[in-house]
Length: 344
Image (cartoon, rainbow, N blue to C red; front, side, top):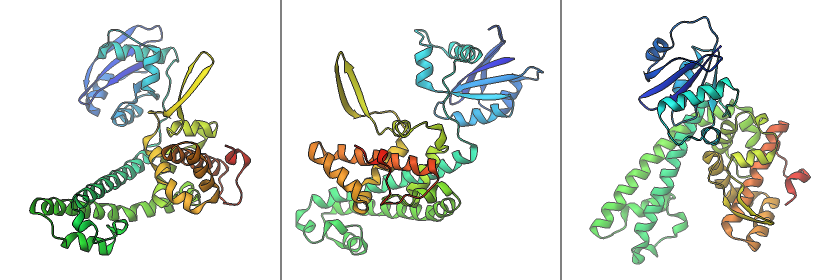
């Protein structure tokens, strides 16, 4: 058996090939191309296992390695650092440490979705990027209008981006510089709307083929796009042993600081899947308009704490309901909520 540690970078990778006794058989820097990798690995009758960290662009190297070795493991970056803390860090040392951990079966593994799932994720994340840019652009347009109270009073700002609002934005008289800025923002908003609309048919097709997405669409506040995004970001629901694990993965749990006999709960954790967190939090407003239990939860938490904390509480409840729906492979029914989901 041979063990390969891969320290992966943007333009190159450093590889260490190790035998069962921990001896380095070969090591060196390799250009990030499939041909360079194959040439470096060479031919052998030995079984090979490889490991690389879940960095920014791990998928390319992972897929190349899968074609050349028996098994590829993806190491969880933060957990690897906790196990193998080193005062001196070089590519050579990192690759060697990864190979040693793999040989000792001490790799804290990160989940590796199937290639098709990763492709769908990229499509949805691109659309989400356009949606976020669109929201930012709308906020910038609001700022421009707000600086001119004399024209702001001419229209209901809640419908600023409806048909009548958009016509008004194109015609209102503003000082030259403000008018120029507004026209540029409107052009950008129009472009982003076209991009989002172009992806609608792709999202509709993918959602129609995904049973998990159809189940999630029965949840209040969860439309087709959010349902598909949540389904592919979670992927296999059985990898989460309980609903609290999914909530943690989504970054919807508070940070905890304990000292002696005192425990403090702070803001939600910074780690977690930012796409899942965004989807569940964005779904809160439409959800509390449709579901009485969620509205009661929101009002209850809002009275005791702040609005943002109440939003997170509802987002977590939606996450927990999604867990049960996916695990039990059933639709959500508003008048049937398990006790585990309605207890505070």
